Amino acid sequence: MVAESTRARALGTGHSFSRIADTTGDLISTAALPPVADIDAATGTVIVAAGVRYGDLAQRLNAAGWALPNLGSLPHISVAGACATATHGSGDRNRNLPAAVRAVDLITADGSLLTLDRDADADRFPGAVVALGALGVVTMLPLDLVPAFAVRQYVYDDLPAGELTRHFDEIMGAAHSVSVFTWWRGGRHHQVWLKHRDGDPQNFPAGRPWHGARPADGPRHPVPGMPVDTATRQEGVPGPWHERLPHFRLGFTPSAGAELQSEYLLPRQAAVPAIEALTGLGPLMAPVLRTSEIRTVAADEAWLSTAYRQDSVAFHFTWSLDPGAVGPVVTAIEAELAPLGARPHWGKLSGMAPQAVRARYPRWDDFRALARSMDPAGKFRNDFMDTYFPKRTDSTSEDFPEG
Image 1 (cartoon, rainbow, N blue to C red):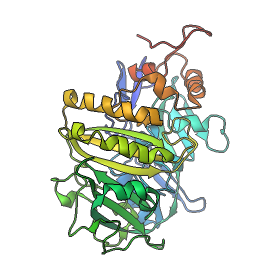
Image 2 (tube, one colour; image 1 turned 90 degrees about the horizontal axis):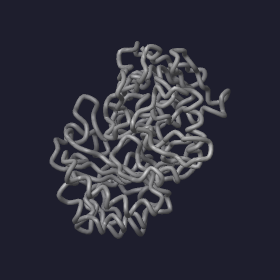
Image 3 (cartoon, rainbow, N blue to C red; image 1 turned 135 degrees about the vertical axis):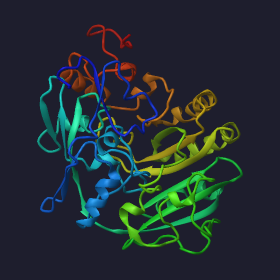
Image 4 (tube, rainbow, N blue to C red; image 1 turned 30 degrees about the vertical axis):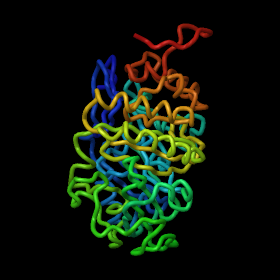
């Protein structure tokens, strides 16, 4: 299919809200490839087919006594799609999902199979993990594993806003994974989710008030008003890692369902200024905001990772399905966060100028050169790639968007 196409893009599970997968050519899904998930206990790795969903992979790993280092907030997404867009979970010491990738198998523009290995191809591999679909169609990924572990999940209600800005590091580092959910108004953040890994020090008083927040008196959903039985088990009940690290259960529609999403990752040191700036936009967000989430992500080495070489804080926004009303709000948010070093999530809505996004990535030109060398005819290019990685008119002129 790839060899015979003039234009092609790979599809994951369709969770991206940007136009990253659009093409005038062929859309190729990997969902029907054999769902390989071969575990190598000697090396602590699993080789997994690109279209496998994290939730399905996790069940098989856990049954064999293994786990992934971390998971995203929902288990419904494909491994290759999540890695291609630098999808992440939360935790001061937890890197994003592509950081676990050891090698990438992909079909290149001429239809041949290429493997890029983390050790053997150190000059190209960091550009091939978070690759936005620009290098080819990923078919297989070996991932690092850790021994399976148990997690207890606790939720606190109504964290005073001042407590988060005064004690940001303490709160976000209180558990293996921490998420703060907020509406950016009312002087409080409505929920804090703490995912405590059994065996780690417990740095919060389960069952007692903490930083002015009170323990939830029952299960919660990250989007208030949604059915709580679609969220993963809370109230400190221990469970396997894959049934606690995501916010949502695999068998249900995640998040709010019909929605739009935006997200920005900033340098960790910009967390408090960003929180203060976003609080001022609370009234503007109110008509269209379903919920917003604050998370932390550890640095990694992938060239186009939103956490490339910087510990980061992530600000996620779940919006009503109303593009006309959401657009001006996103513009206002970006005006506040861009000066603080924001990197938009590749799979979410964003209107930041391509030049501003480019300035956030020191290896931008290296990635563009890699994509050009592997796909000289531009088979995997689309409007999204032309916007952010335009070709040059000649060796000295400035960049321009194609089309």
